Image (cartoon, rainbow, N blue to C red; front, side):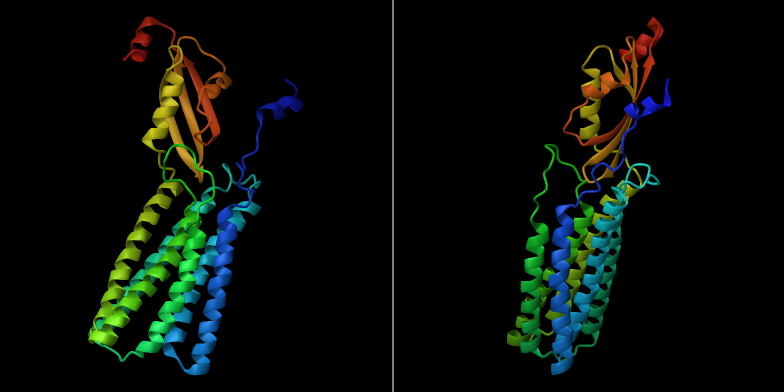
Length: 313
């Protein structure tokens, strides 16, 4: 065979990662909002000598840094989509961005818990009106960010599974954590101001830290399973297996299914049959709505009656 014909069997491995995701636009917009608010709070905090404004501004700075990591993951995945050094494209950069964001989220939650416990043991005087004002501003800004990042406009497949945009989910959890903190702070400050329940402020901080930790652990589990090439869902594997075995005497002897990126999968299928067909025949049997971007099929002929007993089990 002439080498010039090899291109007929070759294909790109970018799997659409060179295109901008809607999450990149939305995360960039949220960074602009958060960074602006951060700068305003830090400057006014210094000018007016407000520790509440300054502290919240610095808190927003930490979340802005985390959001920058999420945007960097989008840009890196897009710009290196055609880099041949990545065997299956840069889809997993998305999961890595989500994993990194989840770790930062856990660190912020632990810092929140530690600060709250310290306040519980050593209460400090609170400038209630000023603190409530800052919390309300924070809630408005973070509420808008939650709305921007939470509005999902990317198409989904019919089946439900966990391999959506984890990088976007990480950014979403960061702004959601800030919004939650603002809500709990308003409740605690009002209770302290009007009912003298000073302990409510650190208690709400601990409650918030527990919730944020739970979000972080969930995101860590989902992203680490992708980074470690954990097998795809039983639902997807069943649909793949049935699509092959419902035709002729085909049996799936081995099946490897793993995520290459958000809603993008690689699959290796080993088929045993009495009547082998070319790999392209079996690829056409696979459902088109599963996001199978890289399919490898190996076919083994089952030659005699004894082997056929294995097929009919």
